[in-house]
Image 1 (cartoon, rainbow, N blue to C red):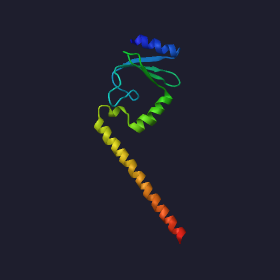
Image 2: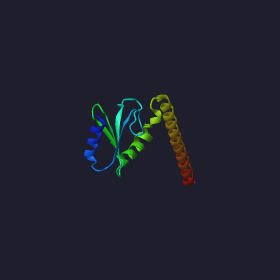
Image 3: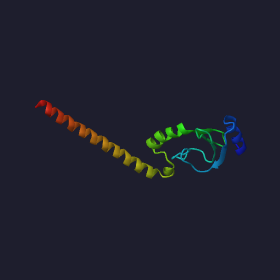
Image 4: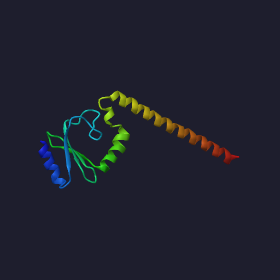
Length: 131
């Protein structure tokens, strides 16, 4: 697909809204794949509307992904925080693994601390009741 074809296709959906079309050759914050399976280059089409819609169009197959404000929040809350799917980790799986393990061990430590504190609280409560 050419730039003009991509513009024409997006304008069919977004009539009077201004567009910015650029050929993206490296991953950005929302079109990112830490395993390198997502196709590059892609056409990135920014639509200047209330939702700040962005399309990523594969020039060979015309397949696309789109993100708007809601999609970005969803991406950050799940893909970002849950899977650490950030551009920083592209091509650095060892760093991703180290950061993920540190966060997992930290979460396990906080959970274990909470369980110990809860058991101690219950012991104190039962001691007061038995007196």
